[in-house]
Image (cartoon, rainbow, N blue to C red; front, top):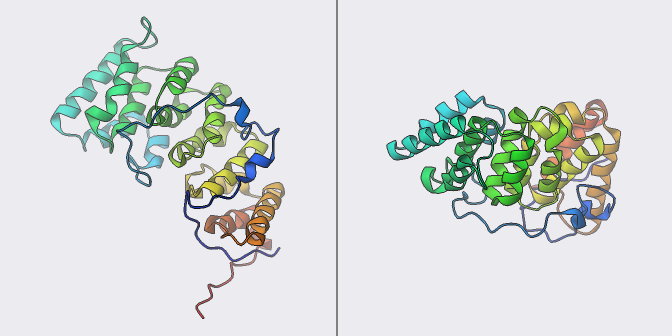
Length: 270
């Protein structure tokens, strides 16, 4: 198998057509099946390219570990607000009236805890409220991008079955790199079928989301000849169009068939 020389791609800088949009029947790329215009950006969002805290912590840490991590970084007023918000959520889970108290606290988290800790605070509130798939869907579809991220990060611990997949699929239809990063975590690794998961990997490569964000990548990519074909075709299309090939592509391609994959060509320093 021959691989093109790779070079880093800049997220958002490439205006080429998304390779996923050529598959009209693909549920991850059928924009007609979307949920309408996205809510306005949350002013508490961290700037693009920042994390709040690390995505591994948000997706994999236990609630106790996450709470310890977050409260250590908050000042006294924010720490007190978060404690009260978690106590309220635990005491009044589910929905009470048109909107639950804990949903209001999720909306406040950015202002109260600051952009660096807002995602984690929202995840903790969802945990404390014991939000089920129905409640998570309501928060996701009515929320800002930041609130949607928190729902995606909370899915692995709160929804044991595939009921949350529509939320992951919706996120994968966007080009919001922070939402995509949250969508390809442990819940997607556990529940996306092979077809959906391959397209999620390709979407990360297209948008510049590092493949390190893809949970269980090594295991799911191993021996996947169809993924290898898709990656090779995508690389060939970009090379033919004079565009750079994402540096992560060769890494994923190597995972599909390690013994048969040669090393990446050395960079030309001449």
